Length: 157
Image (cartoon, rainbow, N blue to C red):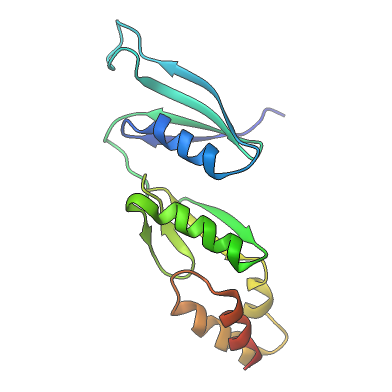
């Protein structure tokens, strides 16, 4: 079967975004940049497309212009075992104009939506104690960045 990749539409910032992402995630690299030539509609030498890999997954950034923007209908999910790792990615993704949202969601400086999720979350939201799960859900609904210890404490009562 052919590989399925993801194309992200940027308004002139595809190369900047790809560089940001490959520096943020291990085992990542830019694999190709197609630049506009003298005869193209874009400025000669600027990136038309940028192919890159994030931890082995293929992506393409397209400088398509301002016609389309990112929204929360599509998001990338990152799963974490510990708070320090979650916090580090949260801080990096919200830096320089990123925006926090609710329940572990954020938008990075390019407008791309991310969900930063503790791996333990399903266990407390769907645990064997229904009252504990309700408490954990109520705690999560009041959070922006998810707090592993606070979610567990809410479940435990």
